[in-house]
Length: 352
Ligand code: NAD
Ligand code: DAU
Image (cartoon, rainbow, N blue to C red; front, side):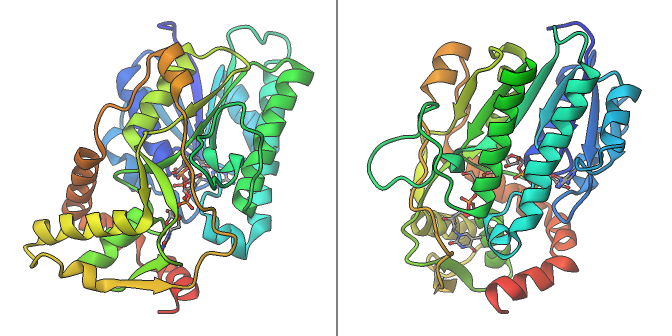
């Protein structure tokens, strides 16, 4: 698709969104990229400093729930493609404030769908609504199986329930109004610009500050980790080459028990910080488990690999080294995002 397009990316100031925006702005100078973000606690324009002056980039501060602002963006910028990432994304926050997740993830997604439906009403041809979702909608695995695109939905947390509801609405708009959509469900991402409420950046930040490393329960829960730039590449592949109405699972074939991952991070950080081997691991502290904690997620990514030719580009070992290097080289970024509101969140969640 080399013709000029006006692509609306929602949530582009967040973790994954900023990688998607950067990739599209730099790789597709013929496209105009409109980043719509409400700049919640998780949104940070510092994530996009390097591309904010690009001639094909526009930032609009707006809430996806705003039924006046969102249609106006479709009209002002003649939007013909959407990549929807804006969401409340942290499971622990969904346990303390589920309605915030219903508002943004369900109400916000439907507001965006309505705007697309109205704007594209007469000509749906060539339009595309890409909904970025999560593997958590499939629930929790308790055996050796993997999540397939056909696995029945079984969300277990308020976060995953809200994402599942948004997925259902996207498919319902495809069926009812013939809205051209694609959808993907991805496993856990890691990499630069990841807000340190999530496991990997939280552990890196605490190791560097010699703070306790809070491992929930026994640390036996399993996650399937994918480098965020590989997720951005998969989104690019699906946006440009995916088939309308299809769903693609994205994952790294990279399952880790939390406790093993935290030990690996400690070992990498010991080496990088010149500490004695084993020093950082002494900070590991087992804390009360997350309520309703999903045991295991693991993705079967055969479909996107076979049909669209996407594959993860780097190993976990390389990706984690790069990630740790980024946080150590960007301690200012970590200091900025962990000041202010982060402190009160941290105290409420971990009690210190
Ligand atoms: P994030 O929390 O880092 O970023 C979310 C972004 O959305 C922020 O910039 C925030 O300001 C913006 N936002 C939140 N509410 C908004 C609203 N009402 N209106 C406009 N903007 C709003 O999230 P992330 O980890 O980058 O996740 C992005 C998307 O990818 C989400 O839809 C998430 O469900 C999905 N996903 C995440 C992962 C992961 O491992 N992080 C894995 C699979 C899928
Ligand atoms: O699977 C995709 C999902 O991955 C995304 O949809 C979510 O947006 C994203 O936040 C992530 O959800 P998780 O709940 O898996 O990620 P989190 O980083 O919060 O936790 C990863 C694992 O680590 C999980 O088993 C809980 C555990 N954990 C987490 C934190 C923050 C701890 O043991 N201690 C912690 O302090």
